[in-house]
Image (cartoon, rainbow, N blue to C red):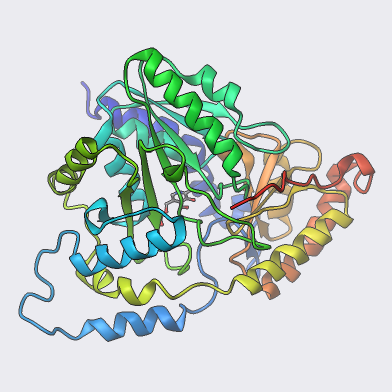
Length: 413
Ligand SMILES: Cc1ncc(COP(=O)(O)O)c(C=O)c1O
């Protein structure tokens, strides 16, 4: 007899590689993890929380009224602070009513999908990309992977076009992109907007963009950022404070409507925020997090230090013949696994006490991801293992053919 819903089974199937990874990781014997091992897998903090974050929470902890911790939906001061920041950052006329406060980007993605897509419709997701597929499945939707351009990991319009069908409702764009670190230039986003406008007209149904932007403020070398919301009116922007504050356990984020959306649709979506969020399980951030938003808008991890870590690790890996994709944003490094087998590579590193994510988890069996939220001391401790494993598995490590590729580098914004 059936126990699990079809959606729960499908979501679990989409998660199977990640679940297996978590299970193996939790078992030190299987993972080959040493006690003084270095964990470079996920975007978790390895240092005490930012003082600005702690101060903002302390400042709002003491109740100022009897309803301080009463039920809270999207609170007006939080929405106003977000709308002002978005106006500033994206140059678009966001209003507070365009913003729904959510529990991180996870909550915003779940909300966005439920607002515009009906059961059975398709959602185009980037490959390699973050773990959108289970979220799509559990919303009774169907994920359709669209491979990014090989080597550069740019948006590949031909591949997105091939993924479109008469059932497509949403195309997910993630910039800066996890795991590749790419930031898509305006030219690519304008071309995508044109493609989706044509396809929507041809198919007689509106295709939306869900612009997943939790790393929007984590960019290197002055690279500009353009949101798809500026190029395509039918765009929902999702954001999380979990990355820029490096506090993903304090669930805070939002979903925002592109102000370019036609008035009738903008009004309909604004009105649907509350009932839909209530219905997905009171999907609002805690009261305390919402009070802190105006203060938290000015707090960030140290981007100069993150740049130093990126440069140190990239230079070392480059010197040992690794073929990396230098990130323009995010706190990840993405590269080709020496020997071409991500699982074998990750296992060899794990045997030396260093944990990285094999690209298999992102649908890329020949790549790996390193997370730079580790301290410089941890990274230094990990580097000898990369040198040894690169030499052992890479064979031709150091050969010109195995060198780091450089990204497109055309950011007009
Ligand atoms: C691309 C991307 N989108 C969304 C999320 C979810 O962010 P949060 O956990 O802060 O909601 C993550 C987290 O890793 C991510 O990398």
